Amino acid sequence: MGRVYNFSAGPAVLPEEVLRECAAEMLDYNGTGMSVMEMSHRSKAFEEIINTAEADIRELMGIPANYKVLFLQGGASQQFAMIPMNFMKNKVADYIITGQWAKKAYQEAQIFGQANAIASSADQTFSYIPDCSDLPVSENADYVYICENNTIYGTKFKTLPNTKGKPLIADVSSCFLSEPVDVNKYAMIYGGVQKNVGPAGVVIAIIREDMITEDVLPGTPTMLKYKTHADNNSLYNTPPAYGIYVCGKVFKWLKANGGLAAMKERNEEKAKILYDYLDESKLFKGTVRACDRSLMNVPFVTGNEELDAKFVKEAKAAGFENLKGHRTVGGMRASIYNAMPKKGVEELVKFMKDFESKNM
Image (cartoon, rainbow, N blue to C red):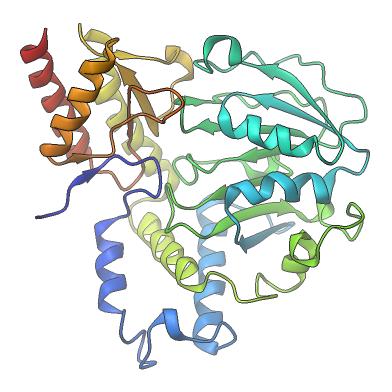
């Protein structure tokens, strides 16, 4: 069987060229006579891999010099605790709840201090982004937190919230490197890489230097202090070395393909194909308010659970994998990250049209 069209929300599709390169270097990386999986993270060869990866992501995102780039472990979910442990100096933080992951981060923060939900779209099953132009930001809030692209529900902040001068922290796991970004607008921007950047097991955190101090909550373990990792160039302990190597390859691939502006253009073109069809279809319906739609994750339903299940089953048989929606919402979801070719989206729409004609 050849490559399928993999619409998984994560771990997700990676660029085929990158996979081929990794395969070619599997037994002998760059004349070292060993795989990156086998080499010491203290070796010259690996030092070059991590330094090049950092330089490339800095170039791609235009990361200013006063921001640290950290390659961490523990998934985005571990950041839900690390963020309050490191930054909740006043023991107050404001959260905007636009889906499951923002909600989990908010619940985790409650362990460490007063977490306030200052806006939420839970009233309509997270199908929109609330107006964040004038929120009741707490006077002594240490930061305002968002999940910028909501993987499960398919929404995206098109305008960042007005934090009234408070530091903004954003989880960008599922929109990482999908479009240009002004890093200066964030105190911290981070994401698990397994959606758009690399294999599961790496988190990239981009943090403004003034945020990283020794002044953390009492009892914060050494490994959960950002300063530990920042002071040691992400090499305090053995990092997820192979995952970082693959991320580095993806950064090179992005640079070779025109960078983030070109990615945004490609992603808009791909998403338009699918959304245009959903808007005209009599069987399938998108679930998100049009102005808040994500370019990365596209949830849709038929309105009939049995028909949804039939669609997912037949799609799988036709080579379209992982179209089942998240267990919390059901229906279907197509994740169309950077590495999903336009042809994959065109073929999916063709299949959907065919399914519609047979099931109406």
